[in-house]
Length: 231
Length: 231
DNA sequence: ATATTTACATGATTTAAATCACAAAAATCA
DNA sequence: TGATTTTTGTGATTTAAATCATGTAAATAT
Image (cartoon, rainbow over all chains, first blue to last red; front, side):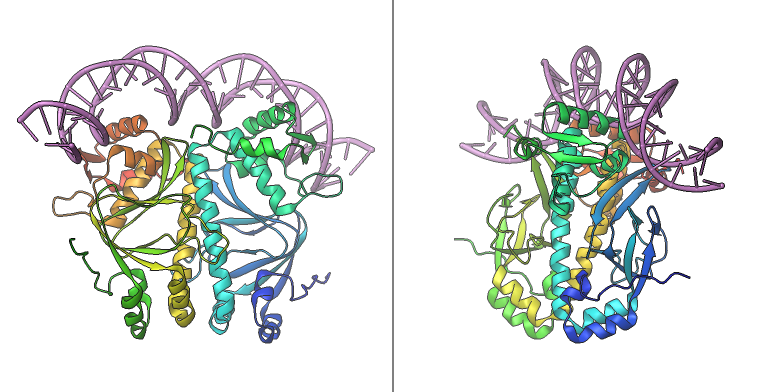
């Protein structure tokens, strides 16, 4: 039996926003889980048992439609919380799925402990609420975009968001590698359409690609594609 | 100068979730505003000054796209909070607009007072956080629907949501009257398409309409339209 | 090391929904 | 109450994007 990598109790949204006095309690209650690439951490409809944080790796949070379609709601990277949304209640089943994009380590605390944490730590609750408010703003922008923006605009927006979240590495490309299908699911479009749009963007010299590596070469123009022109 | 109707400091999300000891402070700090039909309460991009609650009437919360398109994010009815999302910070401008659908009264508290309220009243904060978590779930479902569901499905979903929020009155119709354009903006589609879909639904005997009054006659089948079949 | 699955790549075809273009009716306002 | 604006109603046309079809390359598993 190989031992699970343990988190440092210092990295995630929970640990960073708690009073230090609470950290031993977290240590005692957290469970670290090694996940491998493609592993489903929990699936839409599963009964809710607790809340997760990413310690290492990347996780996609997605929502299914039918047998073979999904929308990727967001990516959770180092430190990020996921599996929240289901606080407070009746909602006994996860409304979304979470899947590891690469091998990594996630941290899990059960619902009961998480709610205790909220009770003893109002500053944490406040931070969580602010985080929710931000996510809501983002969600509403995405809804608007899905309703009215072209696929090209949405792909441009997706690339800009990914760059913002992951930054660029030494070679200058956005520091996450997604399959075209995942990029499509994130933009809310089909693989084929996104494939063509990526080609267009390349021809227009806004990006360059090398397999899954994507380099944004003209962020200004890319950004323009995400703006509504006819105002 | 006609006097503004005053709220009863007992109806809205704020007043209902606060400790009673705080109510006098609310009375002292709230401002009630009479709004007339079609009045823009605040507009996307306006600097944020405070948070609103509906005392009487209905408010649509919407987000523009270009000059003549919008997506209605949600409807706020009696008691509902709106203009939140912008808590905690840097976000100095409203990301959405709020427009009265009918004459009514809204309650306003400035940001400073609202944040004090959060500080002295952790139970309220907890309730607000739960509300946010719910809204997030709903937002994510809507994103998925906008990405993958047909307009017919989205209209069906919109009608079911409206019935859930507003109920039905004595005559059996959903207790809110929207223009077809607003229904379209809520479903994330154009007026013409929604018009045709509403006709279809009528022919299929799932609903009946009389002008803006809509009666859901077969909620079961309407609900089926909102489900992904091919699983 | 080879088999099998998964991802990439592209054309052709279909289709859902947007756009365009008008009228008529209803509501609002001056 | 007459005028103007908004909303409703409906066909014809266009178009963006999905779907279908099919082959290759790359990655993963056995």
